[in-house]
Amino acid sequence: MKLVVAIIRPEKLNDVLEALYRAQVTGLTISRVRGHGGETEQVETYRGMTVKVELHDKVRVEIGVSDPFVEPTVRAILAAGKTGDVGDGKVFGLPVEKVDRIRTGEEDRTAVTPGTSEESGV
Image (cartoon, rainbow, N blue to C red; front, side, top):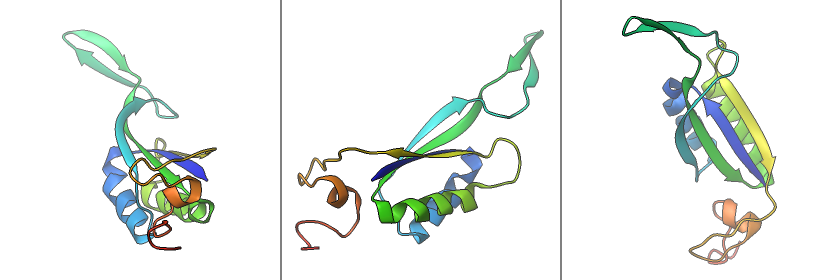
């Protein structure tokens, strides 16, 4: 199991969501975040003062997936989130030791894989 965490441009969110849907990846969390990577610094004038704007608006997408869904998830995000410009973002694959679904008590693989539940008998 992995936690796939992607930091993407806000304007690419709909494209990424559509790509994930087509890859049959469900169950995700989205957060608005600010950060700085390889983008060049912007300088703005605010009330007569010059201010460096170092943080950029981004979207953080978190998806818990079982092993068979890791590569399709990453490929979908990479393809849909790419503009080719600096600041497109990053995708991280973090190991997950334990997952429990609160509603059903399902654990680990069955808790993160759609269609594999105690109820369906898979």
